[in-house]
Picture 1 (cartoon, rainbow, N blue to C red):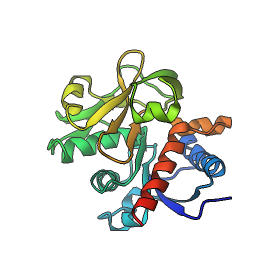
Picture 2: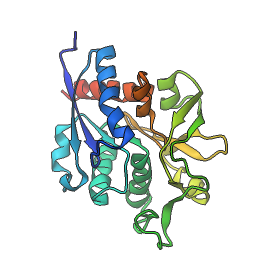
Picture 3: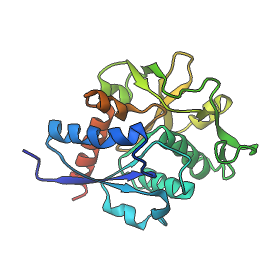
Length: 239
């Protein structure tokens, strides 16, 4: 039976049935609902509809989903900032990871002119830049850091995940970006940042890979399950 409480999750992004991750997300949430008994109501929230973010207060969790560039980058950044500053459980995957970095750089680090090279390729302040090796449909190993929330979710220090990505953090900025509460929680075999989380937040985790896609192979993504459980815990605590 479902638990008495039901959570509402905003899927921030521009839904496209052709995107494998978008196909996987409902499957992943359905599997988590079946396994946990937590009632999940989710809504696809197009980035142009985010506006000033006032409507985000209706949700117990925010998932910034893959498939960027978004139709409205500011909509995605507004949703991420809302989750970060209001302690709303947050999951960012692929494009969500990239834009979580951008939002943090602009609004927490004060790098107001930070840009994403996908949408501002000529910017001297692009912090998200093309990967040295494209990860479109790559299936690669990830090393998770001991004691991190993501390692706890997986119950392991290693996993292998699917990507569909061409952009990541500019390597030379890593030390500056992660000097504060935002910390790296996963690296690939070349020590490139592939997962991060915000310390002191109930749940703020982002991955460059797309963990949701394991649902397409009939598996429950551990990170999605942990996100949903955090939404439920936060929802109960706020009532």
